[in-house]
Length: 364
Ligand SMILES: Cc1cc2nc3c(=O)[nH]c(=O)nc-3n(C[C@H](O)[C@H](O)[C@H](O)COP(=O)(O)O)c2cc1C
Image 1 (cartoon, helix red, strand yellow):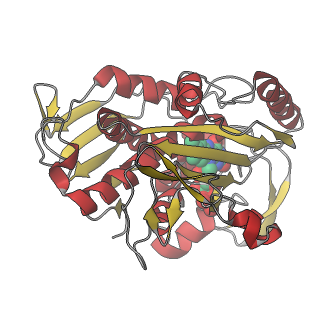
Image 2 (tube, rainbow, N blue to C red; image 1 turned 45 degrees about the vertical axis):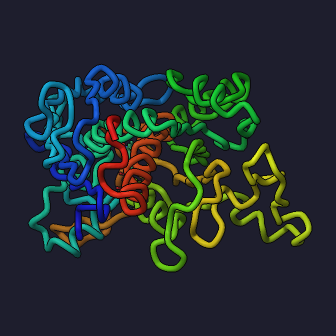
């Protein structure tokens, strides 16, 4: 599938950054799930640019659900959500100049020049808006089943946040409404200073988002090709600018002996749990009942004001490009709600594959 993800619960994305509308179709979601439009609006507000070094393109995101919902609940048939693009300004840069680090050239090679390149076209971060809107439905369905997801900026501009504590639900609640999601306030302030410095220097920054999922039942996932890590990575790498995904200790396992890397088992009442969670809640591609923990590495925003070498596609000459248009000096504060949404959709799909599509129905 090209612009779709998921086997049992699937999403299809459509639209372009400067087109009339963008949107998504959610299919296979259980009937009877509450669709809380206020929560969708709240999630979209977290994706909207705000704070230091944020793009001045601000969209109202006045979404409309045109199918799949009746009297506030999913019907179980395809749910289509549309979001108009209102704050469009195509004159910001010459579309023939390929933006280094962006998808202009790769997209041209695939679509032979028929693609709509304005504002990044179909590759634009703008398309994460319908992803977040649909993700909000998945997130609320998971919450009804006791599954909670939260992400924080773990690393940015050389500053590190503290990790999740043992009071995971408190941490998730703390992050919920924060426009700049860090667990440690001081780390957040230092990171924002780094973004500001990059912005003043007409540059941009990347970083790492860390995500935790609690309440997932043990035994979800498949042992080989449809592992929990595999399916989640597939979905997470769809997010523009994600260049790395790791689970548990991830690449840090390279520095650990087995005696430290293993998660020893113990009993908590009648439940089998582990003393540590280096494996991030997954063994053999299958959840083990511990919190699912993963990190996404984001590259710095490709569009920057500094002058860079490039090629003009129309004249086929070497030129320079300096982007004076609207872009974020760092996308991580906005991207965390995208990661939560994509993770929620992938987890709904995994749960539906394991327990059936009606599993998330609150009346089941
Ligand atoms: C929420 C969000 C907002 C983004 N905003 C911008 C932006 O303002 N300018 C930009 O050049 N890239 C932005 N990006 C990243 C590009 O879309 C992405 O780097 C590009 O499509 C190339 O894909 P790749 O980095 O995965 O290779 C954004 C990404 C996300 C997730």
